[in-house]
Image (cartoon, rainbow, N blue to C red; front, side, top):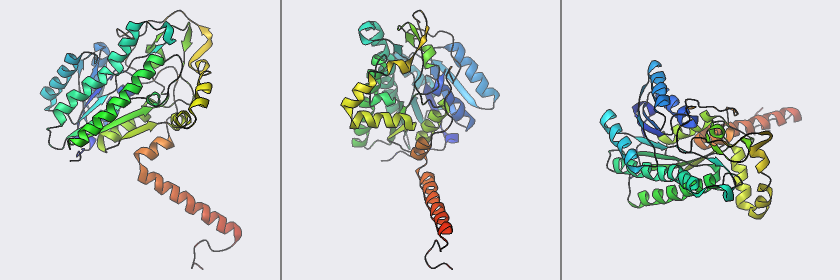
Length: 343
């Protein structure tokens, strides 16, 4: 049976990785729309401050300190949300970490840690959410945040890219199984392009240079809008940003050519004129620099492509209006009626 997704002001939403980036942007936006939000991350101080800010604005928020790589902690998050709010309607698996390093230089324990958070965190959260939503009247939504790197790869972020491929495979398989069981659960994969979050500042960096995001860069709020659209409307997948979608199309349609082009992408991920010593990052522990949605590089605030994915009717209307306007302009220029039968 299809999920009956509620308006935001009637929902309880669980968000992991809520202490920064698009997780934080989603929490603020959902609370402002009237949702009750349960926030999860490893940084308790940041979570406390964020919840206080949301409450000061009239929103309803609480938090549970959670390392999503630990299944018991994720189940505790689900249990405490049910105890605090009586249940939940939407679960957003957003927590993620990264490392800038060639694969040969990446310690295996770091590679495993990436998967503990980025992949196993999604598995733990999704299964905890399924156990609650499957028997809930009306069901609900599970929203997993992957990446355009769920569909393509590149240099320097190999472990991260592999984890996002795994997230896509798991999400698609879970969706199929829920459909087979006729479970009232909408399952969405969000695939952001380069987003202006603190990712480059939070990631471990072993390259010897300051990390950066490649252009074009989009705002965390665009991802938040896509996530909250999927919380209210069943969506299979949403790619955030046309720039990323074009890259994926190139990788899918012309894989060998893309491989050759991608060998030069390292320069777009590093400031080669800004050498720096290795950066520990937040791979294993928070570094106390959470609490910000945006990072050093800020992104564009609008994506027509993403708006088209989340508001297809509005986009069709805009395209139709553009076409009609063009026809009228052409007719006026030619000095003849634009519409058959007009005088």
